[in-house]
Image (tube, rainbow over all chains, first blue to last red):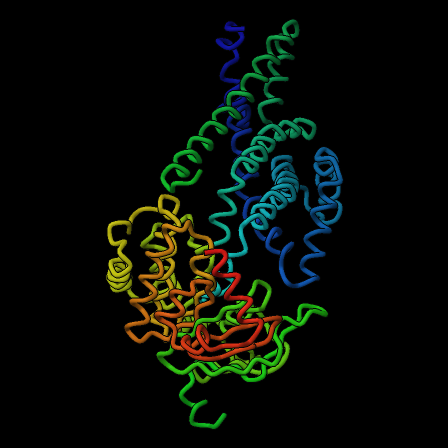
Length: 229
Length: 252
């Protein structure tokens, strides 16, 4: 296994770059980061729509979230891959397709996590802000979201981890990410699939583990600073 | 009630009624609260006293009547409620401090984020208020590190930060351990002695007797009695009031 890493470590890390397209772990991290960063604000908007006083917004949000959660991510990726070019007339790269599909998919799940966080806050928090004359926007921005998002950090961490692992589905539409690179290495070696895919699994695990530990350390530190149980 | 009395009132209820579905929570309430008066609202649980003061700043809607706060109809459609709420402090039973902000940030929240006051000015005033409630040294800690009594005193400072002409207290000591009730009442007494207009829903009959100018006794959504503490405690022969006082004494 160490030999494989010595010979093909760079393939795992960056794919064929700089002689070919960027791939491997670097590409996986880029796709995952984009997926998380772009889905986050969308998820907040969907969560707020879901609990808004306007019925149409609530129904729209609920409809979209339930629809997206009801289809497999792989289906969503295929759907984006084949349908978007037909509908728009433009061909879209695998990379863009994967990011778009991931963002839609993760936003749906993340919005439910965020909604649960908002709904779990004591009503008194909203009332305290209102009683001081705080507008809806200020109350959401300064009182509700900072607390709700922090409280659901563990749930969001799970979702972030899912996002990282789900980038591997980009393989099926030939996005040059980690799994794709691993498969290339496997095709070159031909005889050592166990070792190659063990390295692949270990790499995913390591990335997810680092993210989990980082977020939980941050959470613990903030809790301690604020005197929260 | 004549016009001159109404003019002097900073809060005035005019035939206010409120329903929760079929249940009538407030029934034809008419009270005038003049500037500088300390009004204690009491009554058995479920009598509508908390609901009553929550209608004053529009936390609860009403279905009938009018509530005039400092010349403005609270529940009128065209009233800017966020603007009006800056004129009335509200202290909650469960404090409702913002746990993710430091004590100082809690107190400066409204002046800085809502009234857009300069930060230095808001912080100076907030430190003065914290000093006044005896918590100057806690400015930079978080509410999670404070006792219930300390949190409630911060909440009072937060309500005072907008310099409101009226403060509403919704059972401010009911969620506190007995040994912490005194420190909160002390702050409230000092406010009263400075001429602050206060409406307090409370079971603290000692406070009512000592500080209250007037006691409003409610039962089943109605004002049963509205009188001075002396009259209320010694001479009231209303059976419901007597039963309430007996219950309170048994608890104490």
